[in-house]
Image (tube, rainbow, N blue to C red; front, side):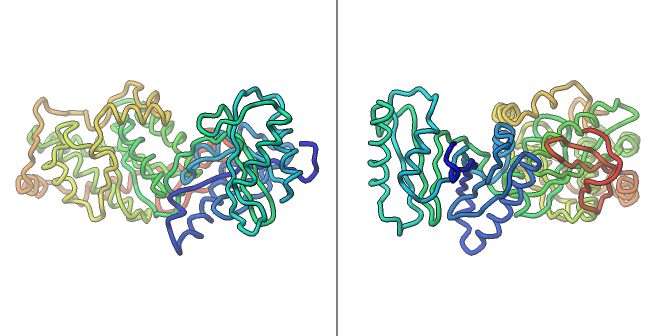
Length: 416
């Protein structure tokens, strides 16, 4: 833009946040903080909170395409657009829009105006007609109010006007960080990363727990967990991954428990350890990728038996989804190709051919009375390895971490 008062920006709109009443400022503030974190180092001068929207003020050297890519991953945004700010003068606005359309080819268009500043002397239809007539005169394109090739969007604010042409969809939901910390049991398969993402969109901050059977099995599942957490960190900018050796527990269960009950015992043991680690990490709930009836351990009876040993809620955002729905979300999210890398999940180790599908909780209690469950749980807590993932300028770096500390961006790390 040649006019000095016309400056580039990104206009961000939200939806669900607008329904939060007196708590809305807190949600909007957090969304602004997340946008600043997502666009760090790309030429965003300021994230300004305006009526019903956020606006990213850009420098002339801003990396626009990278900004657009990162903004598209910020939960809480319903849509956004690269646009421009102009003074609240209609002549300047019209000239800027005409210049912004240079090089575009279209036969039909419409103008849509939102007048958040009601004291502006022209109504929205007045602005639509004035700007539309001006563009029609200079471009020769026809006005089509129903199915235009191009829509010119204008927003009239108290001290400025915004305009843009191409809206892009955001993830929707709530900003990460407004709903508290949860701990996700991340298997490395298809389901749990999707479950984690769905909870990120509900405003939760995520700590990840991965149970592995190394050295009985290879490190592949741990490598997959690292790759999945690296990908999911682009939504919350800092993550914690806890790697828990599970082979010692499986050996003891195999030695002392009848085959049909082993899988449910594995899950109950995992939940107890996850519960203890969640307590240390100040996580208010556990998250799993289970859905009803998908495998033998996910019947209603077995899920109830697993819930029984948790001291905090177990959230299952995929509980009513079928596998194809989950796969479609994993592919859209970008986790699918990682999840299908061949490996042996620790829960498949020593799995019997006919696991119990309706576990009797009294039988489970009798079995567990013969095991040192408290000792097993403490062993899991004591042997956990913790990694912190931090997104810095679009790159995720990994550092040694601690269970009960927030992820840190300092220290000697390695590329993620």
